Amino acid sequence: MSETPPKPITDLWRPELTRLPELTRSRILFRSFSQGFVKLIAKICLKISVEGMENFPKSGPVLVVINHLGDADLPALVAALPYMPDALGKTELYDLPILGKLMDWYGIIWLHRGRPDKRALRAALDGLAEGRVIVIAPEGRYSLTGALEEGSGGAAFLAYKSGAPVLPIVVTGTENANVYGRLKKLQRAPVKITVGKMFDLAGQVAVKKDAVPEGTRLIMQALADLLPQEYRGAYSSSPTIL
Image (tube, rainbow, N blue to C red; front, side, top):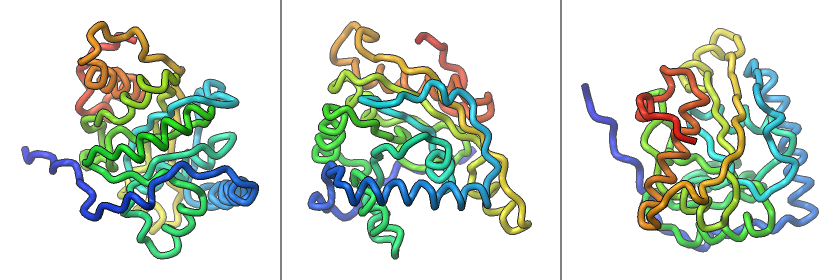
């Protein structure tokens, strides 16, 4: 069996891109328009079912953690959520024609992957301190195996440092092969979104030095518990302890 390639590292360091977006009137209006447009596209391309949306909070601070299977993950989530949250995204997306600029107008917290990006973490912490809902994908890329890969420590660090509760949300059916393959046949891909229950990491770990690695395991296990067995990947045999 071939090994999964290592997680990507952002080549170009551009800290000037990273900031917590100000929620100006124009940005709020743009987010509202964007959600309406994405809902329309998602309705055309995907057949979305949702379970547990009653667990989604009316306001923050909340750290939303998600699995990452393919390009349709975020459109599916945006179409299902009651409002548009803040989110961390890789800086490489900034250079995409048109889409990169639209994402910047939306107010993505740009993140340099595979590096200790203190500016991005600080921006996310400031957002949580303001009571915002922040979305992060702990795997750091869309899965190359079609199931959960090992999580990185950024989400656990944010949860511990801010004290914000964690909300796990998982998506299935958004693999690129499934979505694009069905679109070629003029079919909508069935996609399921499952919203779990919020939990706190505070008090879960007795030894402070183990907080981030153990917190990461707890976060990833919370995602795994919401997924069918074939999607659990690296966390398929871990015990549930939350």
